[in-house]
Image 1 (cartoon, rainbow, N blue to C red):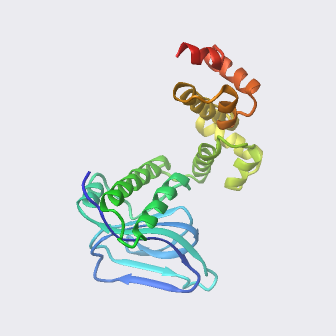
Image 2: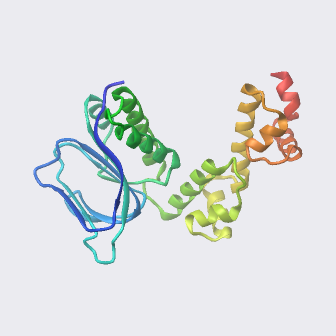
Image 3: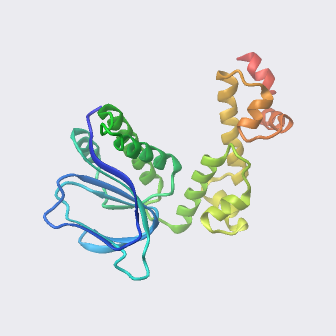
Length: 261
C-alpha cells in the first residue's frame, strides 16, 4: 500500500462568507464532500452550484476557486475535506478518469472513515502515518464505490432509490419503518415503496429482512449469542418471527442450522 500524506483534513462549518482561490494551480489533491448547505466552485471552467451529496475532486495543477456565502441567501455550508499528496494518491488518481464533480448518495460509512482521518490528524503528533494511509485508502475505495453506484444519467428517481437502499443498510438492525425510509428521501410512502421495488426488484421490508437474515447467519456461524439474542441484535425482534423467516428462507430452523454447522 503506497503512502499517502495528509496535510489537512477537517469537518468544516462556514457561517460567514469564505473564498478560497488558487489561480496558479494546486500543489496537492483536494477531495471535498458537501454535507449540508451549499456553495459555489469552479468546475471545468465554470462556476457551479454545489449542493449536499456533491463530491469535488481536484488534482495538482487544477485551478481551485471555492466560494461560500457569496449569495446572500446562502449563509451556511458544512463539508468534509482532505488535502493530500504522495505516491498513494497518484496511484489512485491514475486508476481511472476522475470527474471534478460527482454526485454520491449519503453514506454513513464513508463519513465515519473520514471522521477517523480528521481525529487522527488532530493528534498532537499529527497522527500515525501508517494509520492515516490505511484510512485514506479506505476512504478512496468507498468514494469509488459511491460514484459507481450512482447511475450515469444521474436520474433523480434512481438517486432517491439508492439513498433509500443505503439508509436501509445502515438501519436494518434497528426498528425500521416504511415511513422512516420514505422521509429520508422526502417521498411519500407509496412513492417510496414503488420506486424501490422498481429499481431493485424487491420490497423495502423484503430487502431489510434479507440484510437481517444475512447478519443472523454470520452470528449463528461465529458467535455464542443465544437465538433470542440474535433475533434482537439483527432487528428481527422476537425469536418466533426470526424462526419463521429463517425457516421460510433456508428450509430449517435457526437452531437446526447452528447444530448442523
